[in-house]
Image 1 (cartoon, one colour):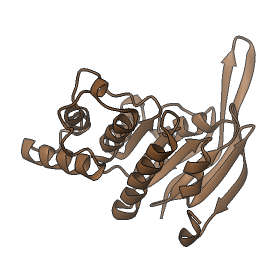
Image 2 (cartoon, helix red, strand yellow):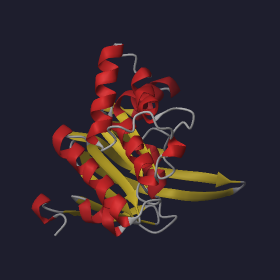
Image 3 (cartoon, one colour):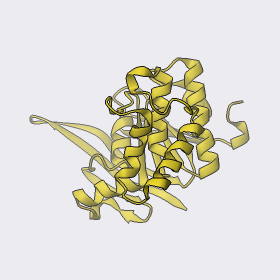
Image 4 (spheres, helix red, strand yellow):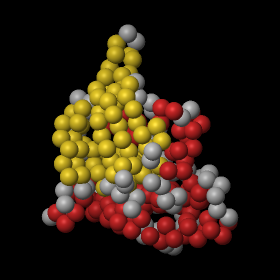
Length: 235
């Protein structure tokens, strides 16, 4: 079943009287459970594409359907609710709240849902922190964590609400290769165990090595779309 469908999606930014096309007509279908990487040179439209998918921006033209819901039919509040409940974000800058502990940063994502009682919230937060290798570090604040540990908190925060889709924009940009591989293995495990769909935007060959699908973006268009058999990944 298709989780995401994009038809003729265009995005034009206006700089004074000049129009700058970021996306020139994207047609894309993503199935539930994919582990996909979007790559291409700087300025190719990768981040803009993720912003469209994550309801952070609206297309100038075209149609986007997420989990059966046409995004163009939703108002600002409706898009915010869709993001809150169904989309997780992982950023290269982590975007953790500095005054909160690792536990509290992850807990905050569940508090926004207002779906679980305190006992269930605690169980979910501790379970996901353990799953990403942070058991015993729950009470540390971001300034007491390494870059890899901060990224693991960000992953836990994205996954704790069990979203349908996780969008990761350059998630390995601030990590060394060893930590990057550890973090990617955590995400691949979540993809396999929970069926969570992942879409990465990256320049990193290591991230691309893990992907089951490689989508190349150039000049705001899909230049190449390659699927790989799962047993061929990492070989």
